[in-house]
Length: 317
Image (cartoon, rainbow, N blue to C red):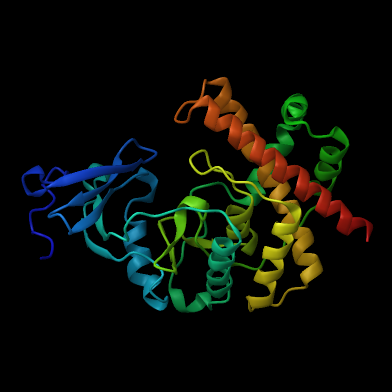
């Protein structure tokens, strides 16, 4: 049947007269809604208005300049606006169907296979890629958490983390120099942005794609907790996934040094996340419920303890 030319009105809203049914999928950072809509009982699409005003035009650019080099592991954009006005910016994507976002061995091994693939891709073939995503860079994160060290130590009792472990992490962060190697990074690869569809791994939401350290995507897959997608991880599972990644990625890296840097990166990022979560809890949740944030805090603290322990196990050996 295809999309009618007037499916989106001049005001950037869906044309209600043409839609049989619609379902809200999630709310963006700016409050706009991503929805599934139906033109008939069997014909459905995803309507995605701009959900973060700072990302204006970026997702369409990635789909035009980067993803044509990829296998079909992403939903196609079928139509989009070219407006410079964030309120009028939108796109319509193919509907992959109901997605189940599971954090288990099969799913994480499935996504890590593709992470290793695009981390191995020669970025020189991809044009003028952004060098910054939505979040601060790790160097900025480290400066921030070092400036707020006393503040973080105040919340350690509720996190059930030993001061001795955190002191060691901060000591390493004073002189850390992460590898300068940059790779193509998805930028926001938490569990809500990948899923199996008909036994095929699909990766969603590419608007934060940029150049970054390999640790960025790995942290988001393994240790980034999200309020909407609770999950748990063990040290053994993390080690297995890192081993799988290192066996597939085509980078000039020393496996031992890579793991050590990953664990320190993950520890720093987790400290930063815990400070953000604590701020949200002080504001009674904000966008998320207090219950969701408490779960996220517990999962992030667990990642910090595990990555810190793994880091110092390597240090001793």
